[in-house]
Image (cartoon, rainbow, N blue to C red):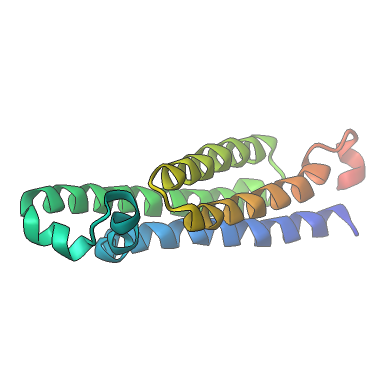
Length: 153
């Protein structure tokens, strides 16, 4: 397989990772109640509907916080899509490093949070995009970090 085709495949795989992040942000921004229906029962032992009835101001606070966290996910998703489509696709080493560090911190922190909330089934959902990112990074790394870059081109 030629090195440039490895980089193309790596970019396609990385886009799956990026779109996952942006979709997570959209879900949290526009449907926070669905997210909390799943997590409130396992962490608090109460369903989200009963929590909403008992403490409206706290629910407003949590929902507002979640929506802004979702907006952050959308923005980061769009930025990492741009990072993948422009410098990563061109084989820039700094883009590879940014995606490696950002993906590791982002998805591992999400997995740790979900584990802390008792959402062990969702931890796997956090680790799948991280595995996709690592696969893409490994595939692209053989091209990006080639000892003799003249052979790559």
